[in-house]
Amino acid sequence: MSERRFFVVGDIHGSYEKLKAILANLDWAPGSGDQLIFLGDYIDRGPQSYDVVQTVAELADRRPDVIALKGNHESMFLDFIGGRADPQLFANGLSATVRDYSRAEGGLSVQHLNFYRGLALCHETEEYIFVHAGLAPGLPLARQSAHDMLWVRDEFLLSDYDFGKTVVFGHTPFKEPFVAPGRLGLDTGAVFGGPLTAVVLPEMRFIYAE
Image (cartoon, rainbow, N blue to C red; front, side, top):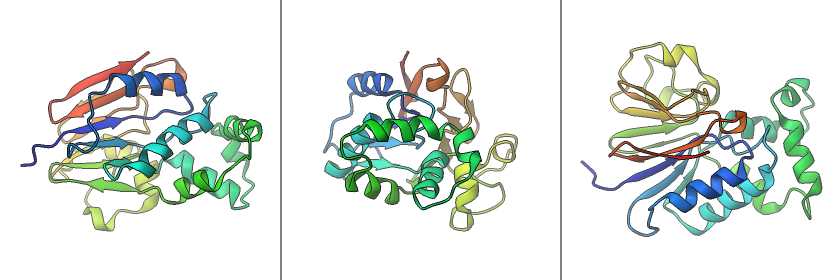
């Protein structure tokens, strides 16, 4: 079993002040072998998507032990900048992100575009599978679709299927971390007035930024 630790941050949604508070309270030591993992949904709904992406992108650019995963909101933003004009994108809070980038000097930079395009769908270790939304029950990781990893909810949450590892996810907001056999959910609705939540694994130590 690996002795390294994993510092995992849930859905941020433009909540930059809460992100700063979380990072200030993590005892993650770069270069120690520990990993800092973000579960996606950096943007939309909240007021400072640009600053959140800038912070996470800079961390990921500098450190190979920082893992940034794609959320469904990053997927929708890529659709938008690729020319897809779908009202559903704005129903999910995209207008806040567009407004934030319109105020930023230089708008959508090459660094940010590369960040969005380079986001991974999942990250697997000996004990854990880190993914934004969850997994489709009954399928091995290699056969999971991008859509399920970004969007799945009840099918994953209500199933008792054993993926062989603990699946650590965000996407579905709860008032407190969702803890169940083989599942750990970290979206506690930071953009809706709840805290931004991080967990330190394997000790299951939760850190909150109100």
